[in-house]
Image (tube, rainbow, N blue to C red; front, top):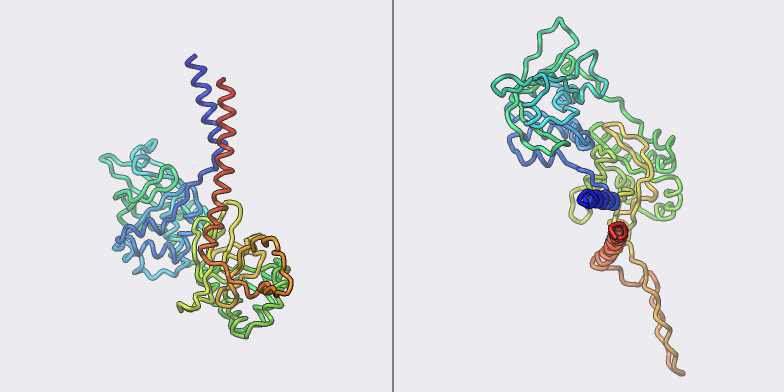
Amino acid sequence: MHRQSTSYTFLLLLLLAAASPAAILAFNVTKILAEHPDFSTFNHYLTATRLASEINQRQTITVLAINNAGMSALLARHFTIPTLKNVLSLHILVDYYGSKKLHQLTHSSTLASTFYQATGAAPGTSGFVNITDHRGGRVSFTATSSDDSLPFPSSSDFVKSLKELPYNLSIIQINKPLSSPEAEAPAAAPAPVNLTDLMTRKGCALFAGLLASDRDAHKTFDDSADGGLTVFCPGDAAVKSFMPKYKNLTAEGKTSILLYHGYPVYSSLQTLKSNNGVVTTLATDGGASKSYNFTVQDDGLKVELKTGVATAAITSTLIDQDPVAMYEIDKVLQPLELFKPEETDALAPAPAAHKKKGKKVAPEPAADDAPEASPADDQVADGNAAMGRNVGFWSGWCVVVAAVAAILA
């Protein structure tokens, strides 16, 4: 009887797990390190080299963090950003190593792969880090090299754990930067991306034509690509349907709406999904009256861009190659600074009143004269939608519980 009850309990857990949505642990290494001011320089260069976004895309990762004093010694060598990225990539292990695991290594030593090795940029057998658990509790980290003629790289020691999310993320402090002659070799800058050519070949030819004909907007996009750029490119069908509105804009308005489709930060699709919220654009000038922002929102199925005038969805990835990411969207992004806010669906009209003979009835206001929906109305609509999703979710749970009850009966 006890075994039967245990089996039913196990079955119940399985059914409940199947009914519940999958939970994926997401983390933001930049926000975590921001809680530790002594690592602000390391945190800054994770962002500057765009390693932070790559870290956030991983489900299992270990970051060997260096404090500000250690970073000062590293920066004194005046590496270029591409070379510094290779060096810092040695400090990102593609496996989980919490403090407990470090002190329980099999045979007291292991070889861990790093971001530098995983990119394929590391020649030969370089790009690995040897982790050794010594007697007395000391744990050391040493970068490998494929050149036996060079001096053996010096090791760095484990200091303390800063953050552990078993078995996904571990951020631990080491006492000095890791070194590798291969990682420190001068690295070539990434080849520039021809944005309008890529758009033309990938289904955004009309938007590419508009961008190419606007010298200021085109130059801003090209100049931003080197430092990191995400482009939301409307497909040809979306641009074609929007052209009547576009032609009525002033020259300044046309430039602004083109710049509105550029986000001056490289952002992978996974980063967009995990970092929902308001983003600035190339059109943003810092003024309170003309912010030219929009909101990125992931509903679990698609990534949407909400401007307050229209909502566009990402339909495909045209390129995701740091420092440039480009996504096709199904609508042209229309900023509030240039267009009226989107209106909620009109309510069903009330039954027409009987007209009395001899009296005129006031005409119904035109659609353009109707009052705009207030933010509160939008919040109510969103709340109702959320309630509908919750009802559907709990209904599914009820079906599961009923099924289990039938089995137990």
